[in-house]
Image (cartoon, rainbow, N blue to C red; front, side):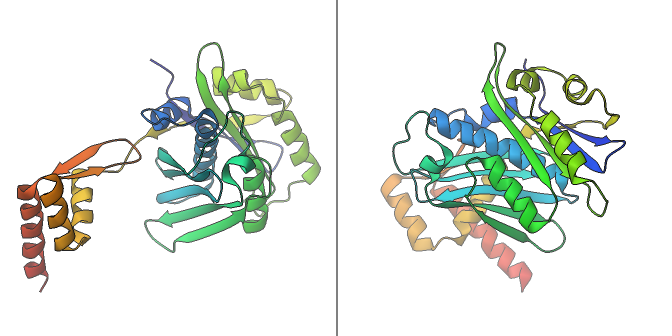
Length: 292
């Protein structure tokens, strides 16, 4: 059984800087399982997953976050949905061939990164940043400077070690409303950048932090588990069918004998026959009467 994916938050005692370290190897494998994604697309999803998990941990809210890449290249969409419980799911859509070794720019073309934050209470927020950096990490650092004016560095690693194929990352950020020296921040970022992929994927969090910052005093907090979870359900698909015109639903039933709703995220199929559809309509009608 592979190690549980975890998010660790940490603080430097003598600097107004905070950090997060996350491993998402297991979650990444569950997201790409059952999809025939080319290797570069798998890698982009791994990087997006690391980034979304790190972003989620910077937010103090209950709700959902979506980090989405969109463009006019052969990879026209890659998206990760997550929430404050670090439950993640993701999917990619392609409209052309993607060669091994393709860069982010070659895959996405003219594109942008859309970050949507949907708290259970309060306003929904959406930030859009053009893909000007060569890497996802560079684009997200750009987003933080524009949206929050907080110096932020992301270190995202995906790869295969002797024991596993994995994805992990570290985020460093100056604490808001505190006077952190930029020199101190850059010094810590330079130290963090020395982390090797196999160390980040294979070592426990406290060993990673010791290797990077053994001359610093660092407080490491209790970890939070990260996991794959799809929010699809038979009820939710039924709700979607309710919104479709009756004639359209009847036509599909007539032609195919049933309606097969497929979830792109997890691959589940929800099949409805004429009896199921009649029950859904009956429920809707009863619900309507109660509302009046």
